[in-house]
Length: 173
Image 1: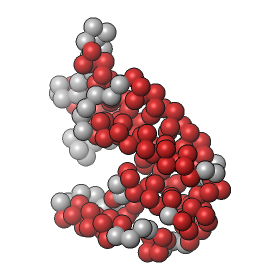
Image 2 (image 1 turned 30 degrees about the horizontal axis):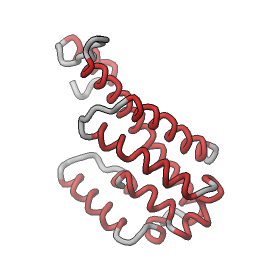
Image 3 (image 1 turned 90 degrees about the vertical axis):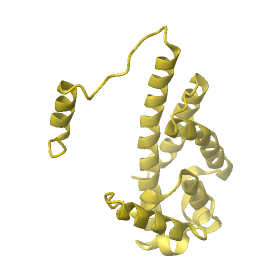
Image 4 (image 1 turned 135 degrees about the horizontal axis):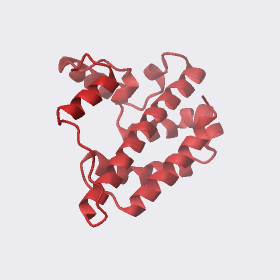
């Protein structure tokens, strides 16, 4: 089945009884929470992937294709390389090096003094705003990635903060 197209795979999985849709039940708080958390998980995945593309493109534009060698905070490059080597050893598909970043790495790259001054200040304007957005998103991300239900407040924060950051860097692409 894994050689099928995505559409054929989904249809086959559904026919075989492997695919299940979440149960919409207004009386079941857990199902409501799971639906909310699944929605947030998808949003965070898309957001994080766009943050990676943005950082990589912005840094390449300013520092060149080898920006990773000079512009990462200390120890970060080695950490990413170790994660990549470990993933490849486990037969995972190889990804660009930035795909091995932790969520907290993004703000460290952005707020590094020379990166902020030369690249990110013009895009985000105020460093404290960017830091606060990532700070607010971090607990929501932790919950969604570790199968803990998020609240309505968390979902609202996620929408506001991802939109705020995405709008700032969307003009860059």
